[in-house]
Amino acid sequence: MNRELARGVIEASYELLEEEPTDRLDYLKKALQIKQVILRCMIFLDDVKGSPYLEVYTKEDFVTIHEAFCDSAEPLLLMLEYFLEKAMEEVESAADSNPFAV
Image (cartoon, rainbow, N blue to C red; front, side, top):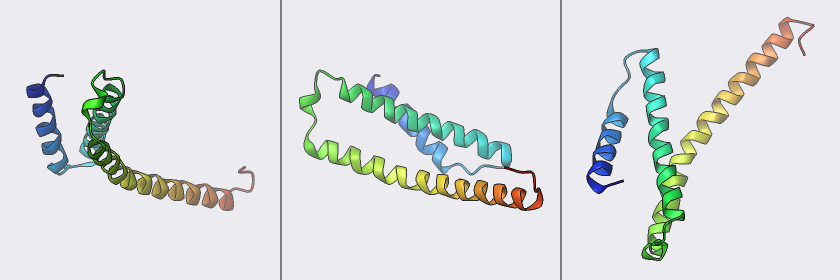
């Protein structure tokens, strides 16, 4: 990816993160667009891993990458926990109201 194209993608990603969704469908659409941003970051890491210029990156570069992914992963884990708990509550309430539920 050339630098100018990458810079444009990064700027568009920041704009996407700042936009407020307008309705339920827009929330879903923007969430899927943000997923694409995360996937682009992961593709970048795969490119770094396989790069013949791996020795150009310093330990500080890898510390920055690691910290950034940890910081971004924590809210995603909290979201998964929230929806898991919500799903478990729905299963339990369905089982309470239906004696044949498994």
